[in-house]
Image (cartoon, rainbow, N blue to C red; front, side, top):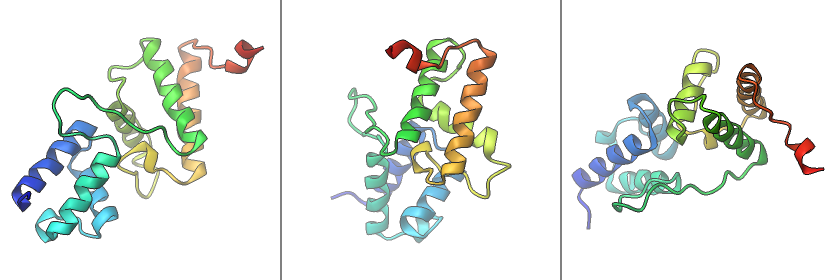
Length: 153
C-alpha cells in the first residue's frame, strides 16, 4: 500500500510527465478533489489524483511510453490532428501533448477565466473553436494544406 508521501511524489512525477506546471497541477487538484493543496488531501484524494493522471496518459512504469486515449469529442481530436500536422511540418519546438497544453495556456491564458490543465478537459465549444482557429491560422502562415477533404476525393 502506498504512503501519502509516495502518492504525492507520484502526482508530482505525473504532472511533470504530462507537462503540467504547479499552477496547472493545483487547478487539476481543485477539479478532482476540491482541494488545491496536497497537504489538505486525504489518502483517497491523493489516489483520485493519481487515477486522474493515469486516465490522462501518465504511467509510472518505465519504458512503456505515454499512451493517450483518443479525445472523446471530434473537435478535440481535430485540435490534436492540427497540432500533429504543425509538428510534421517542422513548426513546433515541442510536438508533444505537453507542448500543446503550453501553447493553449500561453495563447489563451490571459483571455479565458480558467485554462484547463489539459486540452482534453476543454468543454466549451467556443474555446475549442478558438484553439482550432489559432492552429489553422498558424498553418496558413506556414503554408500547410489542412484541406483534407480535397485529398479524400
